[in-house]
Length: 147
Image (tube, rainbow, N blue to C red; front, side):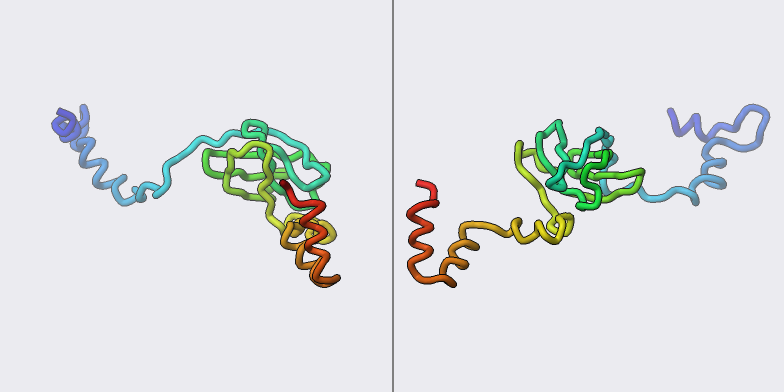
């Protein structure tokens, strides 16, 4: 039915919709994108002193370059990604994580003085303790390890 309609000539013209498509439009068509289109949601946030913003919908924190601490930024997010903009310039991109009250941090966003603390872990302190002496890690385990 549609095919028959498209092949009929326009009123008062000697061409049909199909002929017009073939001669003017077909060559300008491009392939469809590989990824599906997804609407992006937006919200505003202030960059905390720890160089993170919180996406309120998920209560998850994402890092921002330390130069933007204290600034108001715009967060654009989809089901897969989180993008952070300052004055319409994208300053950070993260894969979206919905785990509440956790942090997604790109270490390069942290101030150089704070990067040292970012690597602190139990293993880090055990290694530092071994430099002091063999009994130091044991003292750490006795006093600080979770039961």
